[in-house]
Length: 252
Image 1 (cartoon, helix red, strand yellow):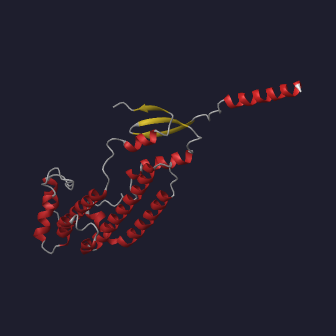
Image 2 (cartoon, helix red, strand yellow):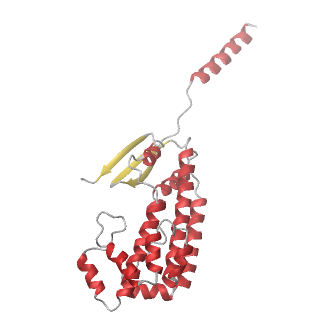
Image 3 (tube, rainbow, N blue to C red):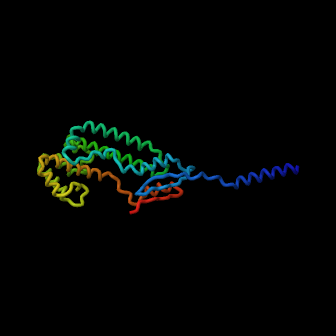
């Protein structure tokens, strides 16, 4: 009986000791990324996050900084002629790029937090608007009257009306105003000297069309593009993934 009690005591002691021993923590894993001119090394707990989730969430931070349609910028008659004569092929290409990019966004496996779900939804919405604007521009170069059916017509009516009017003096007036209005979001065209050079060119009307289409594009773009995250809310949320961070930043 004494031996039995001794055995039970030892077993109980071993059990209690095991219960008091803390679980061994997973070693932190290094994750390197870049942001705002800094090379960042973050260390995360693999028991809480998967590297694939962090990868995809990081992709969502950049998205948004590039567009598959950024090549559609027309500033001279040569590019104008190319876009106008190849609008059908360019529309097909734009749709293909849109579908590829949308699939990439939809398949992202993000960190399971509301902020990333919201960012993903906004990224897809931004892509949709960029695609619609790209289609509008391509169709507008080929058939200016199509701008009146655009979803951006009401917002950017001044430029669409100037492009589609039969009154050339009205078109010229709005075109000229692009070079005179200071601090305007649509005033991208440059100086009065630049306007005079275009005005005296044999392809004056094409230059007017180009500048007014770009003004329309800028106007539409500003109507849906989200405001800059000046507080860095999204990046701060991303940094919370890591137990510790080390930054190596460029000198200002």
